[in-house]
Length: 464
Image (tube, rainbow, N blue to C red; front, side, top):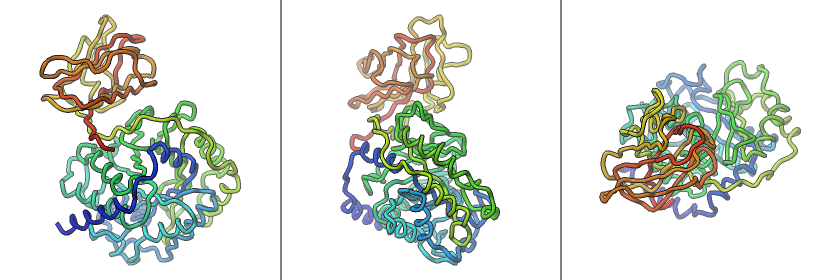
């Protein structure tokens, strides 16, 4: 109870301190204009042999004997970078700031110093923006799939409150270990909208980025302000087709956290990083963030410093290069249709109705080609409020015209009929809140048999 009161008071103070200054589109434009930043993976895995160490590794293992965040900031500046982003807590749950939420933190290590504070002070001193990375998945505190408790959710809120009230203005929070195929913690188990709105309440101009591009389509902002691609995991941005504000990340070394071979390893080519990543991504509305892993002393290796300086020498076309198109607001609420009972007209082979609401954008409900006006319907199992429907087509131009309806107490009501107002594969419909127990999609015109990847039904809170 005492911690909750402290959190509330911190949040109240932050609301007064960090008033909203800019629209989301302005913040997105500024973000892509940054072009290049430094990811800094520095946490308990630095002192172990694996990026996923034993979650019960003692705090005493974290012992950087020459930690100097000013060296990191100078190195970022030498590369022409605009910001840094530090792993405040990675998947194994060790916090490198002075937190009241857990004993598993840096103040109980031999270092006994707040690394987040030293990092923030050092980067601001060089005129660089301060971003923070935070992992939802936390194996030390057993915050894992199917094990989430109310106490876990409160810990997440308390930790984010500390980070967003104690370290000045934070330009962005990069979140990891949430609704991705490998982490398997859903946006229902840890409610995304609650966390998103908390962050915005604490710092309205703080961008929220979730590293979820492995799951969600590139054509819309599902649960993120910035579309985020982890290139090392095979997530590639299309420089020809992207129209959303985006982030692409890659490590300079062979992995995210420092390994004993790094001082003598061959690093990625500075020339190729500039030519194949920084320059073309900037023209495609995408910022590139390059990870540089500090060593166990808390310093960056000489070969990494030299590579960063070479990037700064080679990269001369900095700053604004592209005007970002306006995008639909991010989808932030839970999908009411996910895994609910579905029905429809005759399907093609095995691709039956539930493939259109199975929370998997790689599967589809395929209408049988012999049906002239196919329809698909989901039951919400009781009358519910909702104000948004998102239809994700199999490809960009298959679904031409369609009708959206909902079943109210007095019968079926039409929400939309015609050609989609949204170009591309993802068709977003927002409308005043209605109440209904079923939602139906009827295909009126389609290039070939209808093939629907997902239909989502949402009830977003009114205020953003």
